[in-house]
Image (cartoon, rainbow, N blue to C red; front, side, top):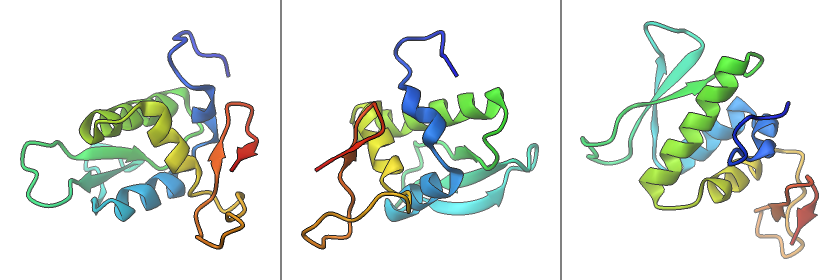
Length: 121
């Protein structure tokens, strides 16, 4: 898929909903279940007492362009909330994938994925 916006990282199409869920939960976001208006969206409550942060909707099925756009928006919102670049958040989410081997030092975390999809350590 080619995006009209050159700022969108093409690796977004590699994101799996389960990996994004794992990322959110690892960072303290609490799953609230499906959104009442759209069962294809899982809602997540921010960590701690962050009343000023909105619930984050995570698309479950990424087969439609609209759902992929929702994933772009989720990563954008996370980047803003975490004070990080969206590409770095995307890299961390992609590292949740079980397809990436662990680092040789046994830390259990995978190396960063480059834009070409290869791993760098």
